[in-house]
Length: 420
Ligand code: GLU
Image (cartoon, rainbow, N blue to C red; front, side):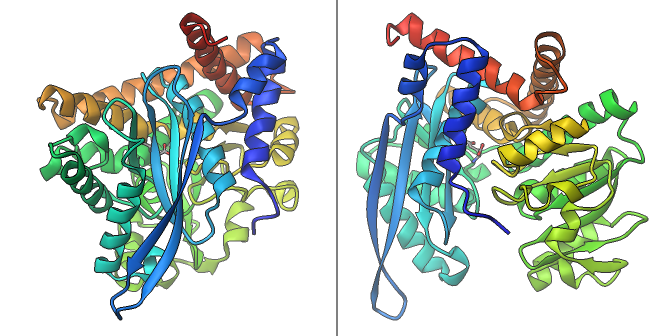
């Protein structure tokens, strides 16, 4: 699937284009193309069989002009330093675009968590957080869940940090379990936010989301909730997939039934009520109105872009569309709601959780959901308006507008602080 794309090179290229679009100096590119700090850590873990296995992890802090670094930690067997750096840069733009008082950070551990026992995973998580504990903190850098990490991981991080620092620092991580200051809304937030963006884009392109066909690649937290809420909004979710493959039904899938099958058997492919099985490649090439890549980077590339038929792509994953593919899609008139806009729901609710923790807690779930929805709609409209009023839409997609707004805000903050 993934070609030899270096996400960091891509992130730098996007920055370069934005700096040029905004007519900013080279100096701005020089300062923002390199992260403030990347900490690489060794994580020795006592395995259940008594042996010790060494894992490697990173925390990249890209820029903190707007506030403390903020972004998730992913556990993935193929993650690497440059991916983590790119992701931290994308968090800077995502947080800026969302109007949050945060800079960008990201963490990663090269591990396949599905191969570890719960005890091994806990020891790995605690050790990783211990190793980065000097550079994180409520007002310094606030990790959260990402690919293959979840509220339980955050509970271990929070507990380990509180043990080391001898206090109760709820705001040091977000995406925590409810019992430890988390919000239920955080669990659904990324997928819900993506669904709201898809709904708003559908309103602009087709007059509404009702009856529109949708394919979702990836059935983890983001993909599943995006599919669930899109179905509730009246869309027809005709295909979903996970790393083992996908399923298709022209009449629309029962999203909850597919989820149950995935939970019970490990994959959506075992869903018997679907019309047929499809591959991940086929899913991306389906003739649907809306495609939601919700898995990993670089799935829509030069290699398959000519066969992509969707009219709108709503990026729930980070970096699913390569720049080469985007160029082709833009020429075809395909609208791409970029990751930094479409998957910002997670970090938007993380911010609400963090504020709530710092205040000692009073925010209700209803309030959190309402604020998330409002913010997603406003952000999409701001990006759409910028795109329509300031850019040549046959040459630039929504991503260029989103980047322009995001980079401009960071640059203004840096100037005000005297960094530029
Ligand atoms: N990992 C998520 C993202 O990529 C959420 C980050 C957060 O909540 O801090 O946006």
